[in-house]
Structure formats: structure tokens, C-alpha cells
Length: 118
Image (cartoon, rainbow, N blue to C red; front, side, top):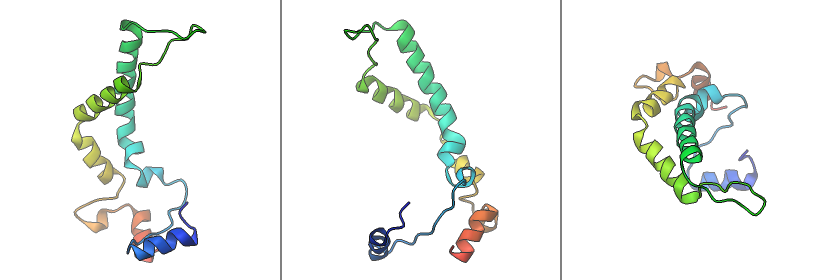
């Protein structure tokens, strides 16, 4: 999405190399989607359901339950992040073929992009 001349010029001035990544490469280049989001969403849903079932809530004039509020949600996310096994994050980059101690272990398509600079 960052293909305008202004963006390319800015990246060049900052000595940032870039390449175009084609669509539909989530399985290779988005380790969060591949590995982290599921355990994060499961943990968040557990905390949300506990709040919904066990905590007192206030209601709008129309009778709708109010949300738990930003403060609660931020605390939940902080707690979830603290408890997330760091190996999930580390392994997700390996699983997507993004990092490896051996460049020959990169995902084939990623190796192609790096080698051809396409």
C-alpha cells in the first residue's frame, strides 16, 4: 500500500529498503495471524465472559449493557500478554519462514523475494 512516490522518496531518504509483497501471503509474513492471535483471542474471550457473567454492569437508557470500559480491557490485554508463552512468538517467525539461523531455511517464496529484490 506504500507505493506512492512521496512514501518511496521518504523511505529512500531514511535508507529504508523496501519491496512489494503480493497479496495472500499471510501464512508466510504475518506471524501474529498465524500463531499468536488464536491464544490471545481465547484468553480475551475468557476474561470477557467472566466479566459479563460475574460482574455488575450498568446499562444505557435504552437498556443495553455498557462495555467493561477501556481500563478493564487494557488491563486484560496486559495480563494476557504477560502470561503468553514467549516461545509462541519466537516459533511463529520460524513457522512463517521469516527467521532462521540458516538463510536456506527461509520460506521459498521469501527467499525468492530477497534474492530477486522483486
